[in-house]
Image (cartoon, rainbow, N blue to C red):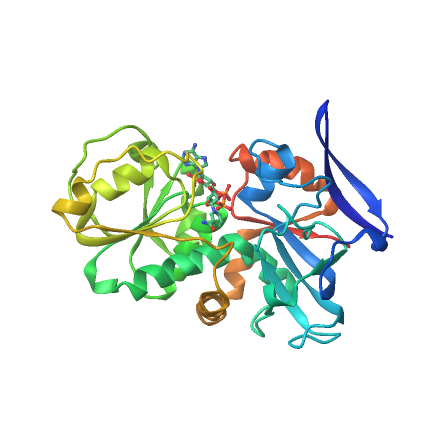
Length: 326
Ligand code: NDP
């Protein structure tokens, strides 16, 4: 038996509980992992609270991220004792996930734990941090260089935003952080932001073309914030869009794209192939100072995950939440 958070659904609605599960009930897979740490991402918040139909099968063990040790494997790449990380692939949505002491997974989904990080640090990064790295890679691979000007990060005190600020700073960019948490200026400065703007400046409907300011943008907020960020992006600038914390809508015009050659780059972490995953983790291992992770992360136990998930969606949490499942 092992401990897990489990989501169930009945006619009365969705319920979430910390429960004991028989290992015989684990789903199919060719690798069994003893989970050491998991995390709470925005998507875990949606799954646990039921605010969005993230979970596709019930009962479900949530948790889209896992750091742990292989216990048993029939997959050629992995053997007992290997330290591994998992991000996404529908785990915690269609396949039992990481808010549990044991997980059974497909070996193809796993990447090695980078030697730069402990399992706890890898989960302080989690899908949010790995997505931030995918966003920085998208901008840099499309040609963004530090001499081109300022880079805007929206949702800056969130998981994606916090790591994006730190990675951009490490890569030599000047970062402007957009946040609703005006009391967190010190936190954002510590991570590497040069200045802050109040997210209210971006959150309301704006003109299709505005004063050109940003050479690049990493947006985890969507909706009017993304539309205004595009409208303020400089000629030939780049916008990486990965999130929807304000909304999934995109109330914009084509003007920034057809008159200023702005390029909008979509970033998905869930089904990203292995090569960009490994590249993103390499950037994290090279550029992310582990001491910054101590600033970004707070730790909770498995039983605290449901309440913390609600706080996350209410925007009450700064940075990243690491879950010690044992
Ligand atoms: P967090 O909840 O940690 O951070 C989101 C941040 O957005 C908040 O901290 C807040 O930052 C800001 N925010 C929250 N609500 C609003 C609002 N109504 N209007 C404007 N800003 C708001 O989430 P994550 O960082 O984990 O994820 C961010 C987004 O990215 C989510 O939508 C998530 O689903 C998405 N995502 C997408 C991935 C992909 O593969 N494409 C992978 C990972 C995440 P502040 O207070 O500083 O303004």
